[in-house]
Picture 1 (cartoon, rainbow, N blue to C red):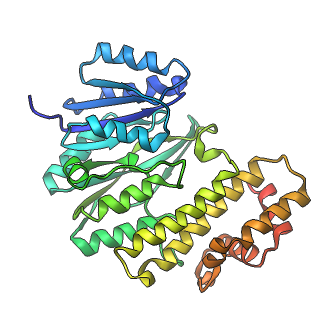
Picture 2: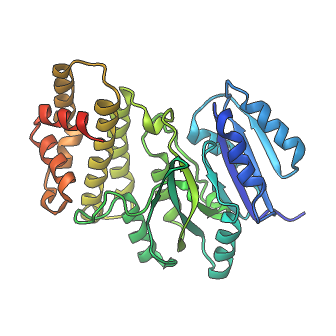
Picture 3: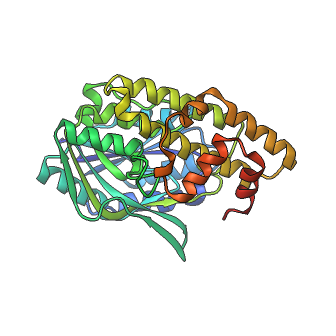
Length: 344
């Protein structure tokens, strides 16, 4: 029996409310020659039972029940049993267009691509769906230099770019050559240790890929679940962010001269710091104002973030990003906290 065209890995934890929507979008794909790998990360709700019920009805579904280890290592468990020509990932509170994998696979075959990306849209409610435009038309990156530039833009764009994000880091909107993944023993790190495990995977993977495609269609629906790890703040988040900056620096240094990626890494650090502080000071409102200002001052004084300010051409940034840079750089913490409190 031939291997399936695409293996789709679905890490699952505490998502019974959304799981049917996710799996239904996979079993009803127009590309029938797929395998769906449901990886139960010791979910405490009815998700494990739902997975087993789907597997009984569809022979293309594999179910793995494992101890809780988090998203990155759960994806690895799926990769260990994947047999497809390509591998895809989807988070279990999201869902995809029914034609997504057929179109991505067809383009990959026609253009001989190692990977093909599509665009995504942020789903808040039926009346609020926000597409994130990355490319205007179908485009391709062939050869080492082109793919390296794509990777650098994925880390972060140059300072003058209108947004902090040019290409979304998420691994969930693409198909990846399984032969590249297995040949080079590529796996995810734990998001519990370092922020943005997807970015680190992309660095490792794209260094071996030489043919990349990108289409503008919004096939991936990214559900804005307010209980997910991307919308909650813990005291460990800043530490994970600092470890991420260090990890990105040491990893990119293996492949590029520092001056090639330095400004992009600084902008990425600013971007992630602004998001973390937004969640902390706009969504989490437990501490007194004075305490918040003192805590923010300590974060701004941290040696890792101090490097972010050094030599960065902040005048090229869009206005709201320039304001954030100045308030954090010069530790004007009362105004910064107030800005977060009133920001929508």
